[in-house]
Length: 328
Picture 1 (cartoon, rainbow, N blue to C red):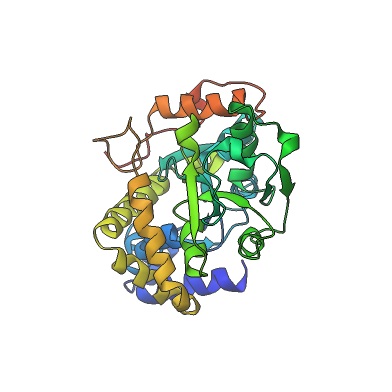
Picture 2: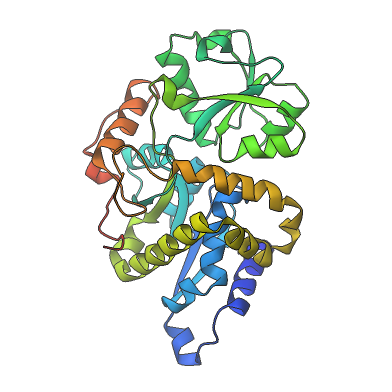
């Protein structure tokens, strides 16, 4: 555990209700790995910490930042963390390769986009020809970018791709060393706006690449041995996301209380969280509980990866996910 994760856990423990020693010893420890450095969609997890939802559920939760969904998926599969907030495309690839992962809660869907400068907008995939695009190879959007080009008959050789260090693509975009970056409208759009950029973007889902994005995934062995702990985590997380949807400020305040050094980013975090709200359901999950996964969404996500994204084979989608651990 690094110093940042220790501070997150310490702040949450201080805010939680005081427990007896015996009760504390009975808590199930869970290391929960985020997909990326902190952004606004993460705030409900911190709300669950600060309001003691995880603590009262008998869980000792520690949250750590990630370095891209592909990396986090492997780390969770290896047991370095028990749970993670991972892009489901990365999850499907990992499972297809035999890694022991299971998706247990959907959060964000169809948020992937291509972001460009407003003064030289890229309005459709064909406009990417002869342009410079920047992304880190471990990003989930990097894994689906070739699918976008293939689905729209854009020659990959016509697009210059730069692979900056993890987390550096925004800087390259702001310096205008890149014409465009792939990202998510609930993450990078608000970050770039805060930095003074004027941007435009188009959704990948508008061009046939409808995909579930981030959700909670579990290490398969941990899930088998600790089903009640996973159910408790998801119930607390569901409650926190619903509270955050009704009151974004409450969730952002919880994040800032846990990580005071992030206070300077409060406005962008709130904008990101508000943008996330429209991505919390899919056309197939209307009227279902928060986090519910529909097999048709998994079929569509897998079809894109197999047809355009280089995934070698299709699996029965039930191998990727389970709704059995969600609150009824």
